[in-house]
Image (cartoon, rainbow over all chains, first blue to last red):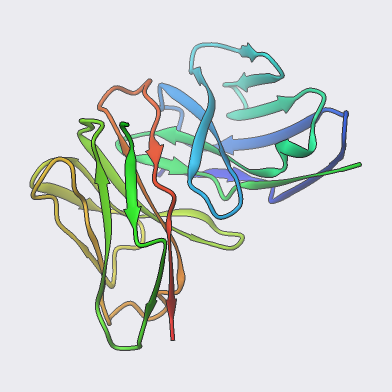
Length: 108
Length: 113
């Protein structure tokens, strides 16, 4: 079945790059997504990548997709305190499936 | 403004009571979803609906019920059969295309007292 996994916690220094990783079991999702959740709020779409692409860049965000290893990553360059949040990767099968979320903490 | 609205933001329930969480969208989306969020467990799918008058169970449907009588509305009832209902509940909607994003409501925090 479909399963999406993430590490639960990442701590980085302000100004460094953050890399959040995700693995998935089912390759049938045409797109893979990254969502961001601020405290006490819903999720907002950050970016998504088409499954036949290897990389997508959008300002400070870079998404890398390794289809062979079923591995997805989100890199945030020049991480700021406002980037502190929970980040979810997701795939769309016949329904949206989310990973457990990675809590990113940015410290001075 | 187009969007998806959940109400109430906070809800308290006594043990043994049923309670209904509201989710309304004016985005003309076909698909709607309910997720439950517990600390460290991410989002778990309760129910989803891809079209009016049809819905499917997600991974943790036991103790919950839904209806989809209108395209705009997908209410979730937490019944007394749900043994551990205290959680943050999120509703989402999306159009049918795979490349479209899901829009989320702001969530309802349900506490059993």
